[in-house]
Length: 488
Image (cartoon, rainbow, N blue to C red):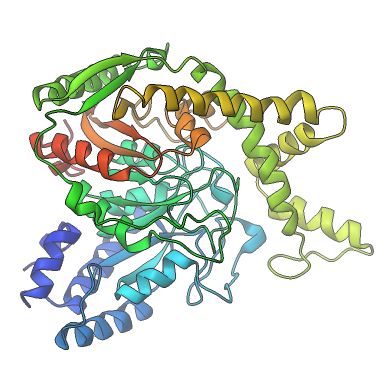
């Protein structure tokens, strides 16, 4: 099989071919490394490519398979967002303050991928410390959307989304704090899954906002997302927020029809500024869900209008505390000054980019004396109301669907100087993070030649239901089969 065809395989298809010895892990890995070498100068999905490590892992994977020691991801090439700690590749969070940093330990999700025998191709680009919606805030330059390299891939996990869309990895991992898996998945025309908060261990994830962050997969199919979630989910005693719940076989929940399924449409998700092509594609997708047998029910999430403001108090406040550890003392950049306070100030001033500084200042202000009750405490009370809205809605429906983003991917530089417009990119994704519920983004059409995406939101720890709905929709359409270069 040619390299071009090898790099377009889904994980499920590659698994079958590896098991029947039609291909080897070495062949699959070499094809992806060649693809990265061919394309990534234009896409810039990767910050670090672990060629030698990946080749060694591929040889080991083939040896494992020869003895019958096979897991779902054995021999499957995977890319990792560069905020997941790895012992054999730099972990920079796309920040100058961590340039060249090598972690002394692996993140739990990385450990689990290694245990399965996955091939770790390298680390992907991200907005600095995962703070952004376009991957333009990286200290090492922006990632470009494979569908149109003049446009952003979304963010903050834009490198991971672009790597899968450009066939530079079969699967990848990102993190989602306010939409940073689902929004770039939508912009790049791939599947992106944000699990329930606590479903996947955050140990070894460089924290942005600890009560919101969640690790999840990018893939070319819903089935692949289910496979990847099964590999990385489960309790971890090193993460105090990790759930002890059993992890089901998510692939068993995939279905072909939606008879008996109740799907909610939130009236509050009809917002000004939604592009007509996006609205049309999502309406067509809802009609398709109904044709598959789903009952469509209007629901209300009355506190949705406060979600964006609540997020931009909560997340920066937590970031302000989390990023205090980057001070040039133990690791990363250190710029010496005569005093310790001067060393802190100079190191952080040079090491952090503009968006990170903006959010640190916002968060520090919200937590400061005299403003804590007025801002942070009120935000937490509002967050509770947002969660209650979802709880009430899920009393009558099994899932809620909405556009993933109100627009398709915008041009590089178009919003970089307008933080408000940039933040609005996540207006549909943020509520799920505030409530801690799972969501999956799936391709549902095109507008202006760029992918449009529908997200399916579900009850906490009910990833099975949303994956089942997304799979049924995916199998009834062909949007997920389109590749960059086939502009519509």
